Structure formats: C-alpha cells, structure tokens
Length: 410
Ligand SMILES: *Cc1c(COP(=O)(O)O)cnc(C)c1O
Image 1 (tube, protein in one colour):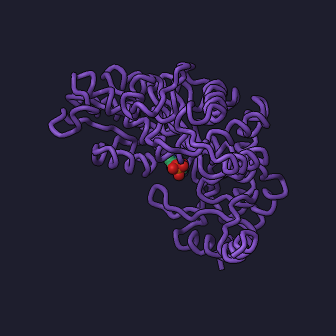
Image 2 (tube, protein in one colour; image 1 turned 135 degrees about the vertical axis):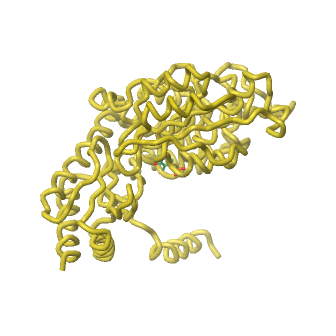
C-alpha cells in the first residue's frame, strides 16, 4: 500500500475509537492537552529520529534536554544541579526516584545493591501515605521492595505528621518515605516541611510523587501548597499533564546525581560517555536507546516563558474553583474536597444518584469527567488539566452537571 493510503486507512480506522482528550471540555483522569509548539516539536523529534541516550549519538537532543531540565529546576525551584531524566511518565519517574532511594539507604549501610542485589540485603522499609497513587506501589513492586507500609492521612488525603512520626519510630533499619504533591481526588499535598524533617531525622530518603501537584511550586500564589518540598531527595512529575506536552513525557529529578548514575549508568567502550559534565540521559533513566521526549518540554517552556508557565498553572486552578462554585450552586450537588488546586470531587447525594449522574453525563457527551470512589463514597471528579479550557467550556460543563443532577434526581 502506498504511504499516503496507509495513513488515510489508519485515520479512518482509528477515528471512531479516539477519545476527545485534547479538548478543553475533557476533565477526566488527569490528562492534559497539547500546546501547539510542543506538538510541533514532537513531530520534529519523530522526523529527526535521533537516539537520545547519549550526547555522542545526538548532541542537539542532549543540549535541548539539558536546557529543558535546567529550566524545569528553575521554574519549579528545585535544587540546581539535580539530575533531570525524561521518562515515559510519572510511573517511571517514581520508579527512578525510588530506585535512587533504595540505592542510597542501602549504600549507607555498606550494601551496594548494584553489585550485590537485594538477596540478603537489610530489609528496606517504605512508608507511604494512605492515599498515595497506585503507581507508587507499582514502582515499588518493580524494585523488589514489595507492598509499602501505609501511614494514616487526613480528610483531604494528606499524610498525618504524627502518624509518620510514630511509624518512623517503629522502624529499625533503612527507610524510604514516599510523599505526595497533588492527591488525585482533592489536589491537596502532604505537609512537606514537617514530614521531610521527620524522615531525614531517621536518615530516610524522601521521594515526592508530584505528577501534577508539583506544578504548584511554579506559582508564587500557589507555592505555599507545597512549601518545604525542595528539601526532599527526589521528585517525580509529568510534563504530559500540567505542562501540556503530548504523550508521553514524565520527569525524574534526583538531588544527588552520583546516586542515580550508580543505579542506571550503563558503561561500555562503544558508548562514548559524556565528557562535558551534565551526564548522559542513559545514566538518569532506565533506558539506553530512547526518544528525545524532553524536546517538547523545551518547546512548551520556550513558548510559555516563565510568566506564561505560571499563568498556565494559575489558570487551571482558577478554572477548577469556578467549576466548583458553579456546581455547588446546584441544590443536589455537594463538593467534597477543599478545592485548593485542579481537582474537584462531587457527590449527588447517594452513591446511586452519583453513579446515575455520571452515566448520564458521559452518555450525553458534552463534557467528560471521571467517576471514582473517594473516602467510601462514589464521586464525580473534575480534573482541570488542559491549557485551552475557557469560560465557555466552564459554562458548558456546569450546565451538563446540572442536567445530570436533574436526571439523577428523577
Ligand atoms: C498520573 C499520576 C501518576 C502516574 O503517572 P503516569 O504519567 O500516568 O505514569 C502518578 N501519580 C500521580 C499523583 C498521578 O496523578
């Protein structure tokens, strides 16, 4: 088949099954749209077809990804000099940060896990908040660390410092603490100042899963939500959510480059190592050959600039508040979370009504929101993650929720 015909056929086959995720009226999961410059940059990445594992195999890709990494540290105000690796998503960014933690806490006891493996190693305790994201558990599984110890959280899903203190007091041995910026239901973040200090008192490695919530750090108005976060040891975030680059792109940030490079570095005579200092991507992520997925991040940040990046994050939060205000005026709707960031969870009274309203809303199709379950209740959840959501989309969404509420009440 001729190439053009293949593409026509592909489009014809795929279109009935595509989700409207790039739309400003898509509020499901935590997805994000695509900034035009980031989309075009992504096409170039494919057309260039570079292998971006090594500077030696693509100096341009290495330079662009290093620049994007430095800009991210700057905009998120994280320790300069941290290693920045571009992964497929926050799942793998969590894997990277937790792998560094495993390496670090065992190394401190004289156990080099890169050399000796986990068999016979001192057992590593991992403490996590009760409402951590399920991909933290997945990453720990991949790392051979098993199911973590869950620490109680408050009514917004944030880890309770007293509970963490008590859990740490019970641990004898190496410990990793995984905290969260941005609960997927409430948008709330763990109290970092207190919890990171507690964890460090116990020589723990502290990792923060901030897939979307880390972006609060970019805004002077929102930074208080994550204050103290810069004291952690590693951070995971996504560029394909809040920053609105195309799928896929996550970001793994590790404050101690030597730890992550000992974990992932691959060395062979034909892999000419970076001589300039910043280090090759293959030392920062669990891949050798890789796509230059940091290049769309470069393009997104270049097109937004610092003020545009701050404005993007603040607009998402303002939009979430406007949606929460609008739906709260509907008599049968109750907003269940404190709307501090981009997430809104609502109930329509009973679980059954909430499920009916959710089904109705999705069947109607004007907007898309996720059904979920939070704190023992069925909820309809809004996530505002798309740069293009505007006031008209907000009005459309509120009207759709109102119709669903009326239908569910019948
Ligand atoms: C989305 C999300 C993840 C997983 O990220 P992927 O990019 O889907 O791999 C992890 N943690 C949180 C809090 C998330 O919202």
